[in-house]
Image (tube, rainbow, N blue to C red; front, side):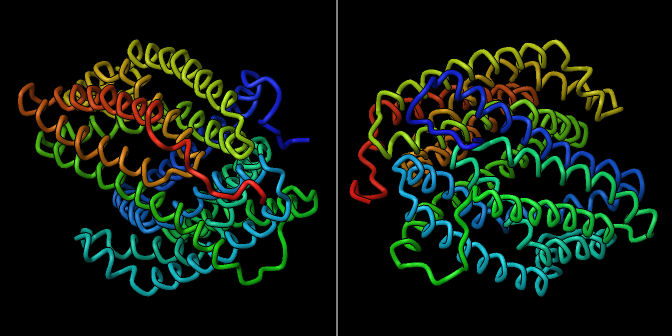
Length: 446
């Protein structure tokens, strides 16, 4: 049985067994993006890679709201799983399927029609405009498959299964790795080939996952029907702030990039390389955050606050040891890692300095993921949104600006690192004294 009941048993073992496959899944998803970039950059060229980068940014930003709705899946379904409310699971899975499908179709049509307008609004360089538009339109065309692919993985994790999603992400990565060179160079489709490789690989993984979970009765899918108003209300009540969280994060990243841009091309290149490495560094922390969200959700549903507390403690302990280990490796090999992406001496130096300065601050951002994951498991999405606004807009952006003004380019890392520490105190304060424990998504009777 791949689905775990987190309301009983050893929390220590459950967290390792549950978070491990999520970490591997996250690594595969990052490798998916890196492989895509390598094929596009080497087979088509730098301009094509730039066009795809712009289009990918648009897709992520436009999808932020739908991703937020999808993230609400983890909290709602995990609580219903903890309550052993099978009928509730049937109703809410149906509601999620209907809502996400409609939103995906609407966004898909909107994106296909207005993709060029969006790119014009972003001042996309003329030489990249056509390629970016083609890539964007094809991805919007396949948006329903992309969302289905993500929904099944999230739904399975909420029910205590993190191993099955790993298999289908692996299939998508392998397929994309094979199809990219065939479509790009073999069929001479260029950027369109890269886009179709993405849509087909993720679409195939989605269809295989859907058939598999349906046959094994792992997710209670039914013939889609109109959901009840209270189901729609709860999904949007959690999904809207979850979507806004994504938008706050993306906007915050762009704001910090504006600080980086003021120091010139070498610093921008070094920062870009460090952020690619950063996306790998935080994978264990994000995986632990996802794990505690699902684990806590099940236990909150049956009022096992003793276990919720233990999940928080084990999550914090695992985060500390894993992130300190990762930080040490990054600190020692910072220059080597930066050189994997860069050739220019000045850019390599900044990237190396940035990673060395910020390395031992990572356990604090990891603690944020753990504590926010626990609070999110209760359904307190607006509260997590406020914590994210504090983290990015009251701390990270201002501190990176102030410290870089006082200390020069290395002040960027100092400011970001200090914001990790202070925001973890805010997260702990709300975890310890906030009202998230009083949050109730469902009546005790059902």
